[in-house]
Length: 434
Ligand SMILES: Cc1ncc(COP(=O)(O)O)c(C=O)c1O
Image 1 (cartoon, rainbow, N blue to C red):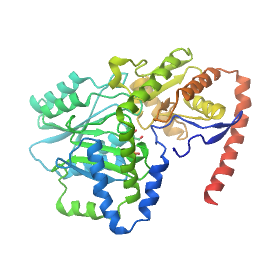
Image 2: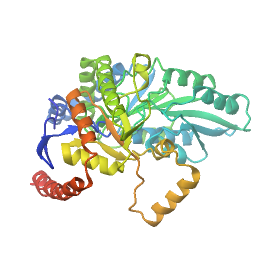
Image 3: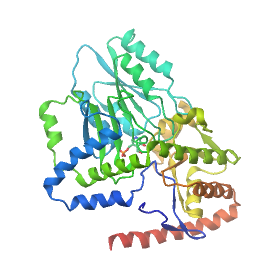
Image 4: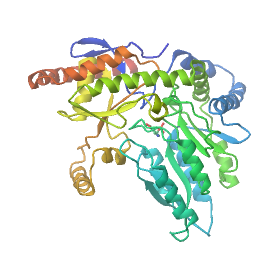
């Protein structure tokens, strides 16, 4: 029922079923979800308006965010949702304080750049450990220093903006505790839930989250829809601007309905079933990677019952004898396995796990300025979805073992790589536009 499942792709040893281990970028869509888009497009406009509140109710129930407490807005993605909150802050004038937004080194650019760029606000990143976890006593000490002891004059932390699930480390930080600490010191809490909603039960009310953002394309629905949940009365744009936001153009009703359908599907499968299954895949791959002496894994290297809630199915690693780009290409060209390599829009965290100090960072900055085509090496990432299998993980592990192949073989395969790229260009793109 999954669009693209079992699709064959050309590899160096013939056509093979594509193994998609890049669900952190976007999850594929299920046929009933895509059918919803078609269905909605065929309905009269009058029904379109009815569907939007229906999907708001689905979101509210799925996330345990009662509509009596939360406003639900549809955006185009997580990035837009977070920008909206940041923009909203810039309208709140309080001459008594100098506002500070507390962020972490773990964040995706989407939950970092909006805070760095709002005028009149200081942006303060909190360090995380090498497994991607916030140090809670440090969070508390920072909030206390700014908001209670007033060590920094009029500077007050008004917002703690953190990721619910890291797109690099797979770490799940303790949102209940972060929320308790933030609210104790009168700061609001925004959670970037882009990597969380489809993988782990998200309970907005239990965690007392003020704002939560996520994207449909990471939740088994198509691109183009995002969600912003905000406690009522927090989005205090001037009335004229609020009106413009609400009434600006037609809503992406097909995409919104598809998101509703996707959440219902996830609910039907059960979030507990999903997280347990993805945990099984994660344990299996971590155990397999631990046996490969050529591989270094970053983040938690084992998951067991005691840390069920700490890590999702996102694993990053490097091969000791190859750049991440080479490892990713080998997996793709030899076995048809799709992974991602690079810095995953979270350069700060990737630098941290590579122990890149300020001196080396300056040098890297110089190199990338002089040679803009040079990319920072980063890490290879695999990220699971509910449809991945243990057999696929085994194929991946075997393929990594085989990548310790001789240089001669690599050169042979590089010749084939060119042929494969040509084939994709000629066949696939031509077919799409014909
Ligand atoms: C943790 C996290 N936040 C935000 C985003 C941005 O999502 P979007 O591109 O849908 O706005 C991503 C995308 O990868 C992500 O992983």
